[in-house]
Image (cartoon, rainbow, N blue to C red):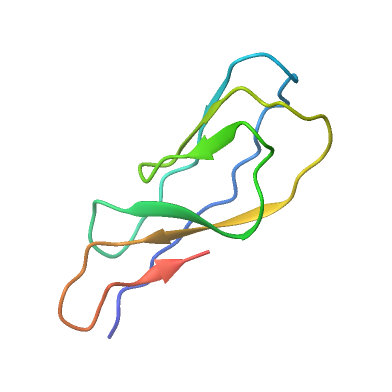
Length: 85
């Protein structure tokens, strides 16, 4: 059976326009570590970036609420890799 990768929801702290921001997503589990993370729908606020390791950093240049989805991909080979969004 294929492994099940789980990416728990993360509640991110509010950021301030023009101020440095840093947050880390809750880690994925299941499958084979390490995992890579990518925004797969929606968009981050301008000035922020998501690293492949799951860290959200930068300095937001806009004000507002933003919705986005992140997909975690495991390091499985063979029939993998496996993902969770």
